[in-house]
Amino acid sequence: MKVKRILFLALILTMAAVVVSCAAEEPTGSYGAPPPPLEIVGDGDDYLLDENGEVEWGPADWDDLPDDLDFGGHEFHIWTRRNSTFYQYIVEELTGEILNDAVFMRARNVEERLNVQFLETIYTDNNAPRRILLAGDNTYDMINARCSHAFTYWLEGLIVDVHDLPFINLEKNYWHDVANDSIRINHRQHVAIGAANLTFYDFAHAMLFNKQMIQDLGLPIPFDLVRSGQWTLDAMESMVRAAADSMNAEGVWDMNSIFGYVSRGAQSMPNFWIASGLRSVSKDEYDIPYLSVDNERFLSLFNRVFEILIDTNGWFREYGGGGNVADTSIDLFMNNQSLFMNAQMWYISRLRGMETDFGIIPYPKFDESQEQHFARASFYDAFIVSQSNPDLARTSAIIEALNSESWKTVMPVYTELLLMSRYARDDESEAMLRMIMDNLVLDLGDTIWVDRVRDAVFAPMLAANNRNIVSRIDAMGNSLQRDIDRILDMD
Image 1 (cartoon, rainbow, N blue to C red):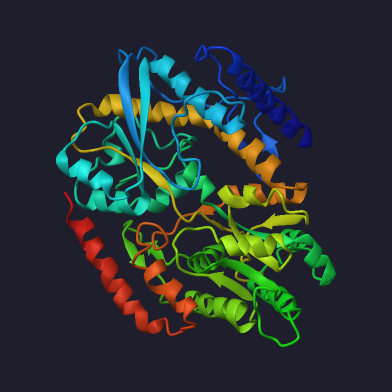
Image 2: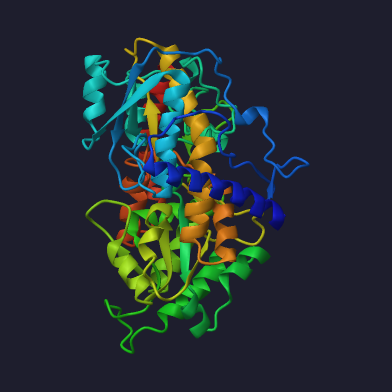
């Protein structure tokens, strides 16, 4: 298995060298045979190779676009929301930075293949797309929108259902089937997540641990706990408590104390329920969402999080100011003042200067009877197409080609070279990252209904140490039901 990985990485590194070498000359944009896709089998150690050790292509790796498509130099305008991650679909030039250059080549290859020209405009006002959509403005062929806003536009009848885009084929490998199944509602797909949606992967969550603190406190090695199936809520609680017990003699923590876990407040609770195989909003057999927190397992998980984070006196949390990254938490973790830290993929790179080694693991399972680990993708930006778009066939063909090309050109670089080589400091963390990326889960109460569920209820309750969740269930359910009724009434 290791040999196959080495062969695969060699192909990717070859691609990287080719891309970087192109920086000194005009790109030809030749489509040709693209770099290999990230085609993983089983636990991530085995890649599909033929008898000659070459990547073996399958039908699901290629798009089904007609070979003779030619859009006559059409200028394809993309309107993209600025966020903290690598949000661009288009970059201006080759720079020698591997992800930038892969994104550059993705666009050039699609441009030449379909005879189009990409133009991208960045916006910062999250509500701006609604004004464009309401006005029937056709300036932009494709809009990249925040997930919760895209859902609202769909409810208002402003965007096209993905199933009405003729060239989009969600059965292909370059579309994320688990994520798209999660956000499909009433058998309708208002948005879709594919290989071109790097924000989805950048917003994946992991837990980091300080290796030196593990050793100093005489605690079990988290990698071993994950592999043995013993990385559970109980295991984490005992370790957080051990770290918290080591703080100053007065027993009151301040910025000089040692913590068991650091995170931004709103980002804590959902990681634990998703890792436990739970969702705040689930779907029934008819693909209709419903609030799914009123059950024994979820209520038990809810209380366990309070016990782990608050009753141990081991949690440093940040509130206010918005955003996903906890700046003070990063400083504390880098200063060896916390055993664990919540992290999203996009800001693990900020720890490059940390002298003490850290490891990357998934969040703990509910208990040892749970068979697999799950990981949280907390948000995503997704493409939307206006109802006033004049040519859905052309638009959908270009979007399909972007995702197909991204699967072959961008995702191998993103996964193998960035996540595995730059973020992971050891082989064990690399294996854990594969587990995390292979088991990403979206929760509707953490994404499109974030303002009704996570941020309106769970985050403030955790901040206030308010454990009376039962009193909030009816109000949450009624709030969601109004949107669900609108969905059921849609034509």
